[in-house]
Image (cartoon, rainbow, N blue to C red):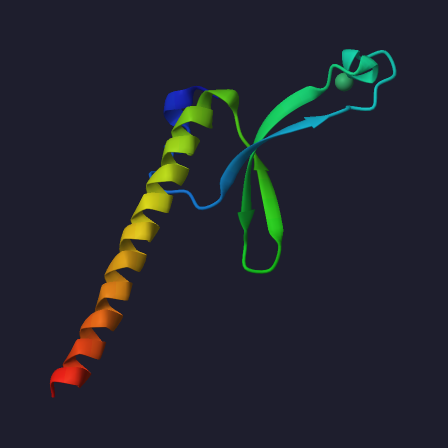
Length: 95
Ligand SMILES: [Zn+2]
């Protein structure tokens, strides 16, 4: 399928990118001699269990950026929420 007709890459992705190395099981494959196949996956928590999603090599860089974007956005949100607690605490003290 041509790339242009595919779903566009997301701006935000929760999880982490990992490289898995594995044997495919074929006796004559190079992986049987120790040269393992590498596949990039997104590892994420779906609310019940850890899941993995295979990543196309051409999507890898964009997915890493989307994961980092999410991490930063979440950290910024946490910081604001902590400041919210501090502000509430100050209100209590000054009343
Ligand atoms: Zn193999």
